[in-house]
Length: 156
Image (cartoon, rainbow, N blue to C red; front, side):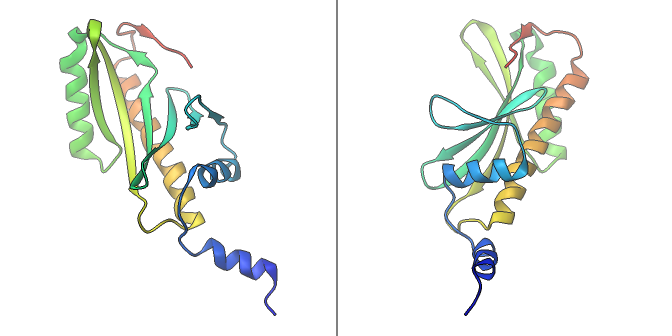
């Protein structure tokens, strides 16, 4: 009769559906600091960004982060250049800008994975940690290019 350790090891190599509980377990296994926000999403704080695990119905899961700093529209051209360079020279995360009422410009990073086939534990760990690393790298690049305050700072 197979041992429960063998059964657990086999289960870890079979793709399973991904849900908030699995992401929560994954973040704990990786030893990452985290919190759960008011909407039930898991947030993982880093120096320049807080990365959230967000589900798009049952179709996809995203690691999504917004740079802690904000900018005015007068910096839009330089920020667009950063986004265009990032998206054409790297495979991820997808970088984009939003402009809110009052001219507040925000830099976003997003890393998406389709959920139809599920993920093994290892794939999920690679997705979560890799997504965080890529998003942090984008925000670090922004910090390097814009060392001075653009408008202010939204600290976590």
